[in-house]
Image (cartoon, rainbow, N blue to C red):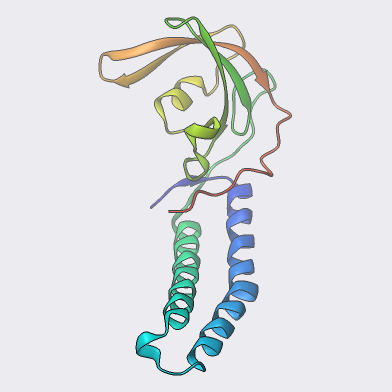
Length: 167
């Protein structure tokens, strides 16, 4: 896996593991126990659904533990006047004459539909370290790309509402 994660990402993952281990696991086991008590397991939909939920929870716990174990920890600090991790950036697309707002996040939190751009994406790579007014070349593939201009950088945005993407 070897994803790039911040200390904040690791803490969110550990919090989810704790919640799943201490609370959800107990609920899932109780649901399986109750469904098993209803009789014939071969035609018991509740039992199958409870077992599936329990297995999905255990799978998610294993996934998060592996992510933490194999992660590369990155620093999320940056200079006050340049684009860095967890910054909200207003970007002007020169060719389209349009402005968009994105937040720069780690790969596991990337979600372009909600404006969360990964630091490993072409746009994220191009924006990192840029200052207001600077142009960045976004290389989509070798020899193909476009220019964007950084219009504004908001350092105050919190990452408290950003979720770790579930696979």
